[in-house]
Image 1 (tube, helix red, strand yellow):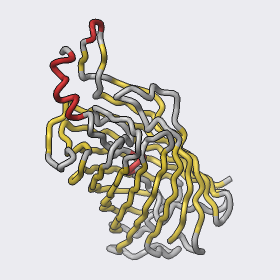
Image 2 (cartoon, helix red, strand yellow; image 1 turned 180 degrees about the horizontal axis):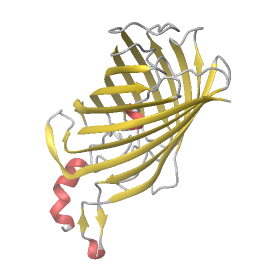
Image 3 (cartoon, rainbow, N blue to C red; image 1 turned 90 degrees about the vertical axis):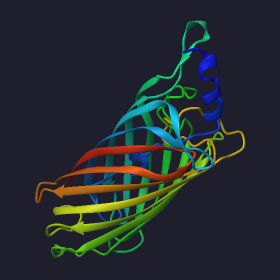
Image 4 (cartoon, one colour; image 1 turned 135 degrees about the vertical axis):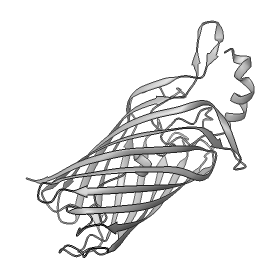
Length: 304
C-alpha cells in the first residue's frame, strides 16, 4: 500500500487519539476494599489481558472503521508492601504487545501493520488510609516512561513523565466472613498529569460486588463484580497528534470513554493465593476505540 492510498484516512484519523482500556486503566485486582495492606504484609499481582477491535468513535461520536485491526496483549505485574498500618507502597510494570500502526518501507510506501513489543510505563506510589477500616484511602503515584520510541504509532505507553492523585472508597466489610448473598461496592477517581504536552486524564469507576459464598471480598471465598469506568482526556497546547488507536493511554486530543466489565474472583482460604477472570467492552465514547477486552489475574499475599 502506497502513501497516497492511505493519505485520506490517515488525515482523517490524525485528529483522533484513543485510550485503550487495558490493565493500567481497568487493572482487575483480587483485592477488596481500597487496597490497604497490614504492616509487614506483601502482595504480588500478575494480570494478563488481551484487547482488540476495528471500530472507533470520532469527534462526533459516530462509529467508523479503523485503518487496521487492533490486536493487543499485556502482562501487568505489581508488588505492594504494607510499610505501616496507614501506608502501603506499590509498584507495577507492564509488558505489552501492540499490533496496529504504520511501517514506512523503502520507496516511501506505508503499510498499516506495525508492531511493538516490550516494556511499557512503570508506576510507583503510596496509598494512605483515611480511617481505621479498609473503606477510604488516597494515593499518589509517579508514572515513569521507558525507553521505547516515542514517535512510533504502536508505542507501548504515554512516553512522558506523569503524576497521579486518586481517592478510593468501599463498603465496610467486617473482619468476620459476611453472609452468603451479601453485597459490596467500591468507587474511586484518579487524575493524572503528564508533562511534555501529552495531555491529562481523569478516570473514575464504580463497582458492585456480589458474594456467591461466605467471603470478605479479599482473601476468602467467591464473589462477582460489575464495574463501570469512565475516562476523560484533556488536550493541551502542542499535543502530538496520533493516527492510530494503539497507545495506553494515548489521548492527544479531548476524548472520553465509558466501559463495562464483569469479573469473577476466587480466593483460596488459608493459602494466600487468589485468582480472577474478567471481560468487558467499551460502550460509549468520543475520539476513542471500540474494543472488547478479556483477561485473568493471579495474586499471592504473605507476611515477612
